Length: 282
Image 1 (cartoon, rainbow, N blue to C red):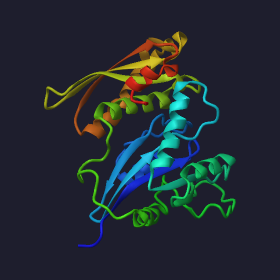
Image 2 (cartoon, rainbow, N blue to C red; image 1 turned 90 degrees about the vertical axis):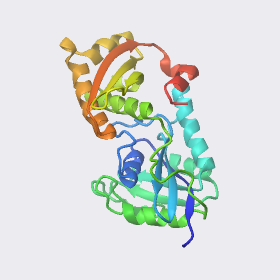
Image 3 (cartoon, rainbow, N blue to C red; image 1 turned 135 degrees about the horizontal axis):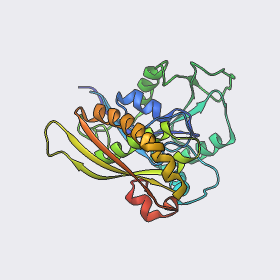
Image 4 (cartoon, rainbow, N blue to C red; image 1 turned 60 degrees about the vertical axis):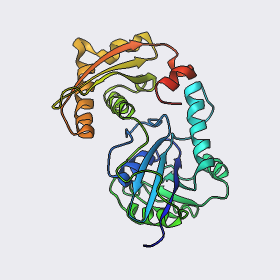
């Protein structure tokens, strides 16, 4: 039997660079939520990719933000710094439409002397500026170049045994993944301002029936005025969010789901470390 490789791979970059899309592409499952809005990812998410000869712990990180406005921003910056520091190698993703920015140099400084793959993303729909700092181009959306990149990443991992059983895909609990799918649906259905003040908390997760999972989830909003926006006229908006989230949760769980949503204003939740920890962001 040949050598086995294993290690931690950090997916780093600025907001909306395609980190979550690449994680999902490599894992083959929708673990990380993906929207067209920047700063969708709020915490570090591990995807476990296992092959016969290698296991990679893929860490999807929030996009590096500038000055922290509150505890949530601080936790996101910390997640990037810790992941860059603790990884065995890094994949730095650069949106080809935006090109190389000073923040990319900051990320490289955090990674230090560890191997780094500098990868341009969205090559299927972005003009290539020909920056020599970008070593290769991929499209996580179409898969172009992703398989070759993964092979090269796995080949650079240190030798070692697997960390997790081969059937595990993430270290996050199922409730967290379900809450994220509800939040993803909220991002898709709401306007520009509201989604960034929304968090989701699973209140109950009932699997007592073999043919149906009953889930009750609370949508937390940062402002009292956002409650009506999330509910919508006649409850139409929250029904839209629930319908979209339910279909995605059913694909994740592989069975029918009854999803009940309600909205609770909780001003300042993003400024409270204890609340962020309860929500799974710390």
